[in-house]
Amino acid sequence: MKKIFTLLTLLAFFITAKSQSTSIVLSQVYPGGGATSGAPAYKHDYVELHNITSNSISLGVAGDSSTAWSIQYGSQNGNVGGSATSRAIITPGVVIPAGGYYLIQITSTGGTVVGSELPVAPDLTIPTGAPAMSATNGKLVLRSDTTLIRCGQTSLPQNLCATWPPSGYVDMVGWGRLPKSVSNCEGCTYSDSTATVLGGTASLNSRVVAVRKNNGCQDTDNNAADFDTIPNALPRNSASAVFICSSTAPVKLNGFTLQKTNTAVGLVWSTEQEFNNKAFVVQRSNDGVNWVDISIIPTAGNNSSPKNYTSTDNNPLSGFNYYRLKQVNEDGTYNLSAVKKVFFSVNYKVLIAPNPATDFINVYVSKDNNTNTIVKVTDINGKIVRSENSALSTISIPTSGLAKGVYFVKIIDATNVTTKKVSIQ
Image (cartoon, rainbow, N blue to C red; front, side):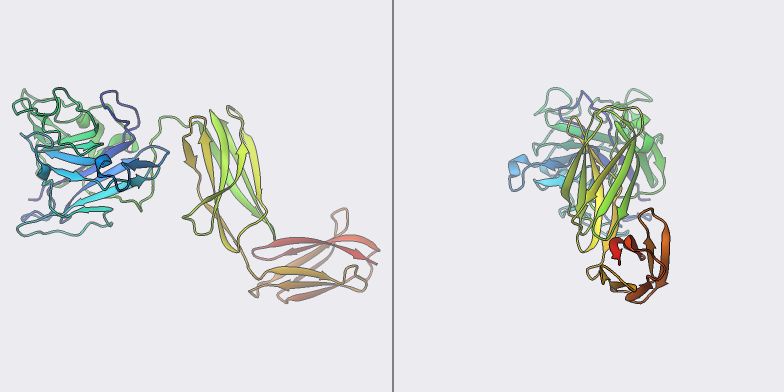
């Protein structure tokens, strides 16, 4: 039967035993893909990386192979990164956005490959089938360079590291029953002097997925204690929804809404509490993908009571306008709000003529649909003195009975609100 083991390792805290920041972690490891027996879910092995921070992170420098990162595998009784066939090199310069994922497919080769293709497209495909990971027992290290580790088992030659972890170590997971060694997994625990069991099962001889607890953020440096097991593997790639692990919530956003007029968009939001809050940056996009900063709003910094904020975009784009808030902390980290959008018709125009008016107030509405338009005329005290509802592009409102003076005409349709001032003679 095909044996699958998947690990979701989303680390939320800095681990002093690691030489690198725990900002990029091994979030899933799927070994033994394409088995010739049983009913495997997928044809190929895969490894999923996750950026758990609120900042984009680059894995090396584009075009510079000397800065590339790698994943390195070790068998049950072997060293991690024992040879080039146990290593997969990540393309240098890959950028993983805040809370984003990166999916590496290790293509199965040789024999009869069965199962389904991955449900999402891999961001990187390793075509050689290396490393060929065992579904039963093994360990995998994420490293910030490509140097082969070639160590891990005390009974085997340790050519490049005398202590554990080695330089360049970023993250590690181990599965199955592994010989007793500090270099087989994080926080290995042993049921006897020679074996450790990860994920709460004595033998991973059936399809299981090990999921890190507390929404993927628990990390006690003990793989066995940090995972639950569920029956399905769900790989994520760079197009998947982001998820940022955090032990604190310095700013609690209480609401974010848009208020549209004929010529501008008002943004309104509030916070329930603030801690080390530096600023809000209002960002706009015409496609929901590419964003530009349009304003920066200073904040209270530290505040335990509700606070309201507003900003106005006086030059919205034709068509859809997408808005989001980038909340920036004092340390430079940031969080992004939900995205809101409004639509501005390219053809929408309103004209009042004549002005000053005598017998009629003529309202001309140029628009690209036939929806109803509501026209309300108010005096300077806000009292409604005339009201019309029509789908016509020209609406005439009689002025008989109205005293001479200044009035306001409010034009309302499904997507626009416009107010004009008119004089009656």
